[in-house]
Amino acid sequence: MFGLRYAKATPSTYLIQYRNGQLVREGTGLAFFYFAPSTSLVSVPLESVDVPFMFNEVSADFQEITFQGQATYRVVDPKRLTGLMNFTLGGNGAHVSEDPTRLPQRVVNAVQVQLRAVLAGQTLEQLLGASEGLVQAVREGLRGADGLPALGLELVNLSVLAVRPNPETARALEATVREQILKQADDATYRRRNAAIEQERAIKENELNTEIAVETKKRQIRDAQLEAERAALEKRQQIQQQDMAGKIDLEDRNKALTRLRAENAKTESESRAYAMAALMEVVGKIDPKVLQALNVGQADPGALIAQAFQGLAENAQRIGELNISPDLLRQLTGKE
Image (cartoon, rainbow, N blue to C red; front, side, top):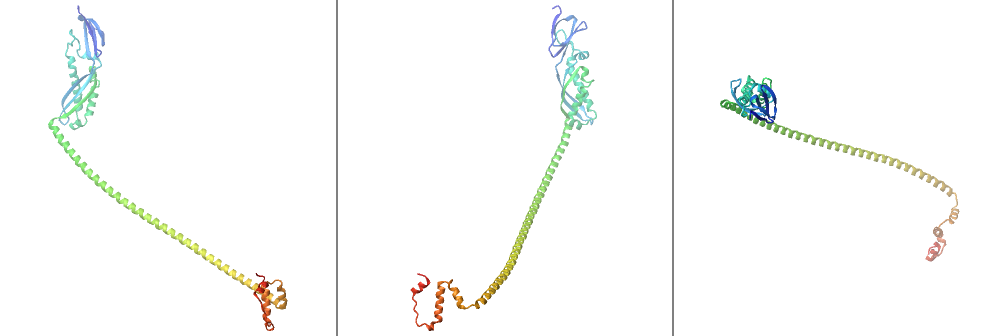
């Protein structure tokens, strides 16, 4: 009504208002009224955008390669981008230019340029075996000053989903790789057999070493037993020698003792004989009757009776008849 309109932007949309060529306001999530005949609105979406791509390039060894992946970007400098491309809104609220729809293609072109620069000097096998390094190199190139930042954009992510040669080359590579895999399988089989043989040899050596160790231990045990028996025999011989020496010493002592006893007995006998001879010499000079008289007081009654009977016997020619009854003998001896 009378050219007065209302504008409202989302938080993910950067809105710029120009009035008569002069900047009035800019920012995200703006809402305001404006006079359409003298106002220009520029709208730049700030959300991230995923752009798929697929390129056919040639490696350094003239092999065709297909790259398939996806790039994710977002606008970080809207004023720089609007200075290069037209994001002006029309009266119906849509962009008046096709530049916003061409922006993803420009990003894809930048990816292809960086990818082609990285491919220079690399063969097919190198590219197939180093895809991660390729992605890293392209990512660093896009983040350089002459990459996406020159458009006011920021690379969020870059991923290469597939790196494929043409079918004929792929079959040739498959054959080569298949042969290498088969060779590796054969080598693995040979290594496994060699390892099994080596393991068996090691087991046999361990068994032989074990047997040798057992025999050595048995020999040591036998030697130890023989040494123990020899030590025991020597000990028994020492004991026997000591016992024999003890017996010899005892016999020598017994011999000396016997000799001493014999000498003592001889000396004692000679002493008794000498005393007896001296006594007999003295007694021989005394009258027998005196001796008998001396012996009467100390003699036993039986001895006296025996002496009396001896005297009767000596004078038997003078005795006519002598009767001695048993009662008399008992009375004489003092026995009842």
